[in-house]
Amino acid sequence: MKNLIPSRTYEIDDRRIHVYDQIFSPDIARNFANVISQLDFQRRESFDRELNTSIAGEKFRKAPFLWPVTENLFERVGRGEFNVTDPSVCFSHSYAAAMGPGSCGTLHRDIDSAESVTFLYYANLAWKGKWGGETIFYDGNLDAVAAVTPKPGRLVMFHSNIFHRAGVPHPDTPTYRYTVSVFYYPKKEPADVEESTITA
Image (cartoon, rainbow, N blue to C red; front, side):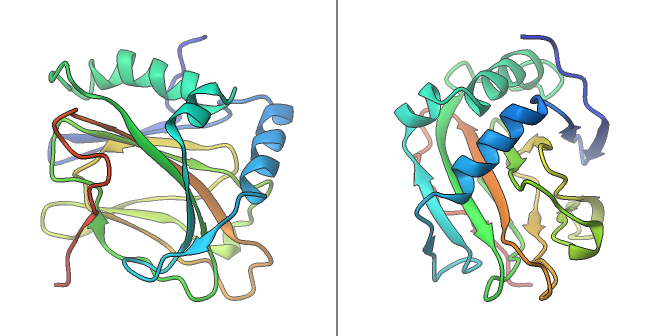
């Protein structure tokens, strides 16, 4: 696999966000989008009330889509620029989400650990800027400092303890905002850790 180069990067309080575009060919991106849109999504009443579905670890590893990419980036960038030094950190779990009417973007961090990395893949076939749905990232003072548009085929890699939230698409958006989240946590951390939210 070729070494992917981020199209943009951000640094928040010594933590990093990398944005990668066009990680797949158009055909693979289209096939992946079709697979994601046909998953059995269920409403999650807590947190942000999005539709989501867990992706079994074995199924995720066997699918010819994100697994090789996240593994390559974690080993090369996560243990390099992201300074993840804990040797136990590895793939923990993944899930797909669909945001639309009835969803809400809740400010949260995935886990309170500097030794963890999250990957967020935007899985729509098409997306217009006027539909919104940006992922917003915040500094330690909860001041918004970066916004990432859910461009189809885009992959965001970031330290899991950065506060962020998903922007809800505009009501006139004719599709859900599909994403796949992939988590790399220390083995001592449970795979079903609930996201850390803030109500301030």
